[in-house]
Image (cartoon, rainbow, N blue to C red; front, side, top):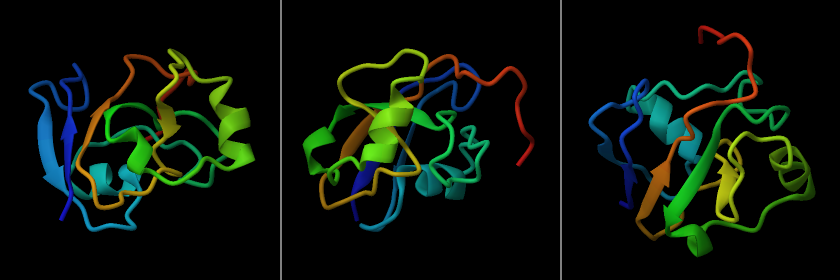
Length: 112
């Protein structure tokens, strides 16, 4: 099973984390299943950018971006060339290293 290494984030995982997830699982689902409560205001329907992550390693192993995700990412805080919406990026066979940006475009956090 692929390993997802999450770099330290002051709120979601201050010490960083390493989790495993079966291929075909979205990064967002993998994080939530492992008690890393990343924002996902649209309930993973690709309608916001609150689950934005930067894929530091393993980016090319993820599937191609759909046009909807590409358009939404233009509004994400801290956009980088290796940015993805974690609800739309599915784990393949390669290990990943991800960083959760410090901020989102949300003014108020949802309690999921």
